[in-house]
Amino acid sequence: MARFYNRSLWVAALLAILAAGSSQAADFFFLQMSDPQFGMYTANGEFSQETANFEFAIANANRLRPAFVVVCGDLINRPADPAQTAEYFRIVSKLDPSIKLYSVPGNHDVRDEPTPESLAAYRQKFGRDYYSFRYQDFAGIVIDSSLIQHPGKAPEEAARQEQWIATELEKVKREGAERVAVFEHIPWFLEHPNEPDQYFNLPLEARQRFLPLFQRYGVAYAFAGHYHRNAYAGTPSFHVTTTGPVGKPLGVDPSGIRVVVVRESKMDSQYYGLGNIPNQVELNVHGSLPNGR
Ligand SMILES: [Fe+2]
Image 1 (cartoon, rainbow, N blue to C red):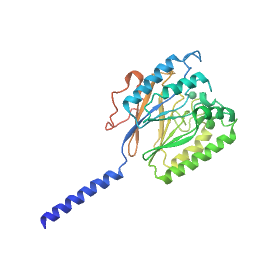
Image 2 (cartoon, protein in one colour):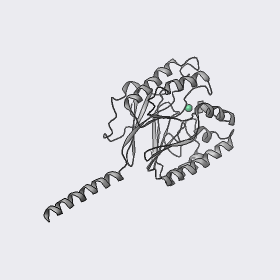
Image 3 (cartoon, rainbow, N blue to C red):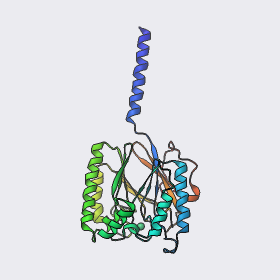
Image 4 (cartoon, rainbow, N blue to C red):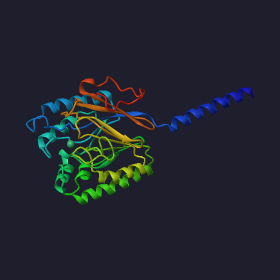
């Protein structure tokens, strides 16, 4: 009887451990890169520096083996430039096929003020400019931020994207994705959600529509580029991480990549200059230094 009782206790304990394990989402990491921007260093003269930087970043992705890589826009410097586009894809093709890469459109890809023609040209070369992807219970929502900053020349496209974002957030929630991040080129804001409009953020008028939507669906993280340096800003419920460039820096942060660790209820990240990329990513090291140099 005592033996049976002991065995029952062991079985109960084992079942409890298994149940706890199955309800906990596994930690993983991905790499965020931004602004490889082929041609920027020499004002479209050539792009050997961008090639060196992006090849190094992709080689490190192959070595570190992230769940996926997201490139947050300004893939090239001159919209629709065939040589710059070809170089982007030549280097992207070196990424191990088991690691998915998601491209995000920047203002240099779809133009500062996108038109139906510039969007069609982008979509023909790079694919969709707004879409979502999944990794386990994580959902990535990729958006075309230029359509939000300057909708004037393609208002129907801008309205269609806005409708899609609302529909997609509802779908993501229905499908049970617990961890969601938005990927965009132009940050929602750099310091404060109510800061004045400028070249490096999205208009306050748009923030006032979208941020409550994200809050309603529990979307707490956005990752952006465009600034060519790091910035971190947020409210208790919405964190905007702006990441320095793989290509040409415009501030003190060197060219680099960001490692984002996705945990059960938060995302920690660290920016690494290209000369400072770690040997491996330790998932069990907590604490974020989002503006680290
Ligand atoms: Fe940009």
